[in-house]
Image: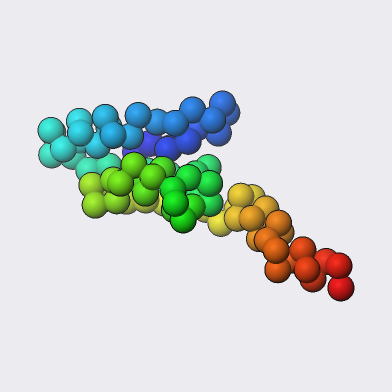
Length: 84
């Protein structure tokens, strides 16, 4: 289990290396994408998607906390409604 982006300083976990090590020892990988969701990857799916590791990471989790709220509040649709 690791975070993909560490919140205190924004460092990215060496996820490819972690996945390779887990595969060597027949272990599974679980990642917390709470600080990466909406930011990394082509569609904002996180670091796992950015690195193309979706089929090699067993569990991805995140939250619908602050980052998602900020994304929603800064969307073009909300901006249009704010000027109504």
